[in-house]
Image 1 (cartoon, rainbow, N blue to C red):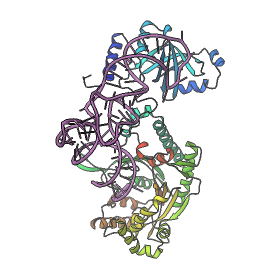
Image 2: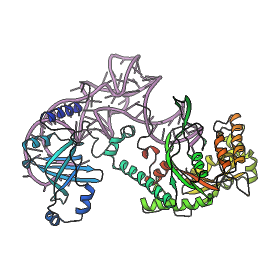
Image 3: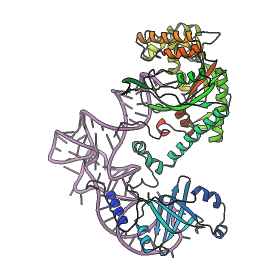
Image 4: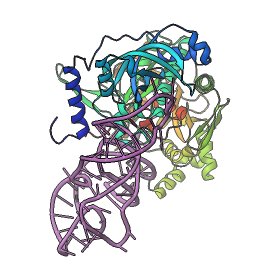
Length: 493
RNA sequence: GGGCUGGUAGCUCAGGUGGAUAGAGCAACUGACUUUUAAUCAGUAGGUCGCGGGUUCGAGUCCCGCCCGGCUCACCA
């Protein structure tokens, strides 16, 4: 309560003092509401004025005051709990002298409890006719302006608790997020998948190509990495006998921040024995329609001014065909690699000495085709060179039985038939090490235990990673990943 | 890191070419009001104009540097 605080804050602290002096507790915790607001609305919303007046039952609600209309003896308070909003009515003449005084101390943002019969006002608004009220929590900070809300993007993320109160859309996004994750669990568990948790702190950060965060364990005096993927541990569980296993968990990548990248993000990975990547294509064509129907009730959804059509089957194209068509190159030219590398050099894309035709193809794809694919599209048959954990295509060992699901120009899922030949896996790791030695900054580290694990024997298997945050962006028409993460990473204040 | 763009009251925003005490709405404070719901009416108060320099008789406004954002490119799942 120093002099430099805004006047309004000082006033509120003084108010709290006065409330205490008058014998009220500004942080009272013994009010137990009997009813949720949604429950009351479900019962009474459809009833007419006369029908409601016949109901003698008293309802008791608690919530945050989101609106105050005090007009002399008649006082209306808009209340919001986790389930909805309802209005309470208080007549000053029916309150004790102390409560009349306390009523005048209330501000938007406070929590109160109130009980009474229901009625409809003359404007037909369902209202709780409260004969008394209880102050539950006094708020100090005023809430943002009532009809513009909190607009300042930085303030919205830094003080998400205010954003959630002031902007209904923000709250809605996180409800959709929670519902989507819940439905994904149901979808997988209905198909016999088991959810297990694998280490976040890892000695070897594998399962993807990305720069990790480093941390240190004091007792063991070793450096550990925050996981960049769950892949290798989940496959270890498949080897151990969990033939259908998944994890929804946080992954961490020490890379740039953008509207599609947050340093920590949530990924679903699942692995399915006796399946191949074609089976996963079918599974995705069930999963996405399931989610969309449950959450939005339709398969064509708006996204940033465009329309995304999730009606299965989704489009399919091989990476080579896509690039060959886009740049008017023959597949033979792509396999030689010179044409794609030249194209990349012309575009100013950095190439490493170790890069082969596969890296070049993948880079060209990302430069040209990827961002143009709006409707969900399976891009299949990735080069082995960029797929160190994927099974080789039987007909063409230069390619992996792999696909990425691209939506709105962004990768939403990545899946493949899993490599389970330990000798091949060791060679792939060694190739990665060679590329690293030649200067490639992003390679997969050698994981000897994982090779040993494959020697124990992993059944034929397919697995997939799916970015939950990006999925929620699509479901909620959000332009930035920060909108769908409650507390996105920001520079400290 | 580059480009563009922003930071003015608790919140949302105004403040051509530099000019006198920096404005509005909401929120707040005082009062009126027995069915309001963007309540209304009368009155009051609230500001290191992101920070630091500079130019000028005079800077919210112009110049330089810095801090913190947003979009975008680069980088990257």
